[in-house]
Length: 89
Image (cartoon, rainbow, N blue to C red; front, top):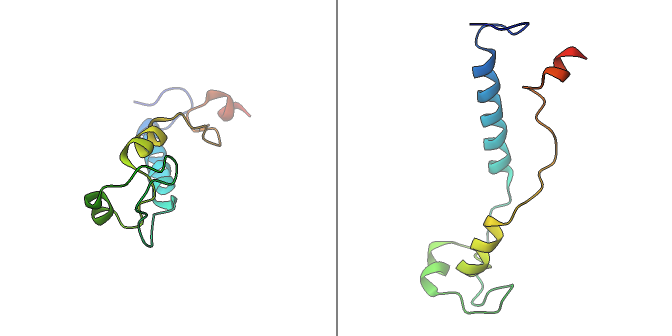
């Protein structure tokens, strides 16, 4: 069912495009490479050998990595695909 000026399937296309954008952003993130550190780059705690063996190029301990992953980050850009204002301009 289309609503207003939107064609059939427009909502599904918007969702799919948003998912594809996020996947592309995640793939573009810099992957860790090289030798792993023996001590965390932030807190200087020793990094367990099992973690160093499991993840090549690890630089942070589990606690610091968890803190970094859960921190709120501002993301650039505005998703205007679903914005009615962007369709009127």
